[in-house]
Image (cartoon, rainbow, N blue to C red):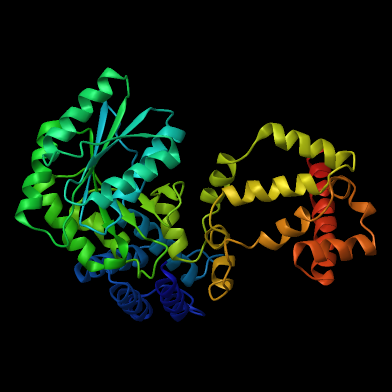
Length: 432
């Protein structure tokens, strides 16, 4: 996501390299390149023009410190204005009411049903609330079945009325059902069409009027670019939704929708979604997204994701084992499991400043730990607990049993020892 835009913005900042200060003359070419980069990324032209005008006004009014180069100053101004353009600060979901009702709207194929499942998992795990999913798409049996499968995956009940073709009545009945069972959150997945039409708009407006949701979210496929912004405008004119959700951000997208949509509909981006996993949903933070667009990484999100999967009891046990030199392959396997829970490896690496660009053309499979797990799985319980006992003959047997080679096993043994030493050094440093 945003890779081409990041490259073009970096090139535009280099125009100011070597300049002593920002002037109207030397900033003109930079702003021209920035505007061109935004338009190429499918940002609405009026939005791009207004953005560069604002940046120019602020840049010419800045006194460049001797310790700060003009290119660095321009990067900061663009970063701040990008964050402001996308909303400035994160906007939380509104879950008021008894039950709180969240209405999901959008075109067919935008990822509404998958997002409904992700949102249910998010509210259940992050907010500690009971959730009921409602299958309101009465035209596509596959959508109802998909919601049932997702509900089963995340442990959330799904309300359906297979024989009914009245989505308004289904939604109303679902809310009554939730009240009788003290379920405090209801998420209504609605029908979509391939394009905006009057019948769909009338139906979704009727559902909203009937259930009076505390939150109406418009789900849009970020891969549709500027069309996503136009569709959002049409939906907002009829529904007056509360926020936008961008899906498929892991796809081949130029990112223009994320940058344009807030200023066009004047509604916040609330969530971004990527991948099919139920935990692949993030609150949208404009300032963090601006950092990623400019190639600065997103360390805050990386740390937050690590903390979500951080087990304090396991950490204490690991520290004790490292201190007593008893850290073994069972512990190593547990560390791998913790990392895997955090999500897609390439996405995680891209959050580290400078690393995302270096790995841009490198394929990092989600099965990156598969070989390591196979090798450890081929060890006996004694070998896992006593790595030092794994001699040459044992290594040959482990390689044969795991379908790998002796160099693969030797490489893992070396990596294990290096990891153990590094973690021990970190633990020792914290105690000082």
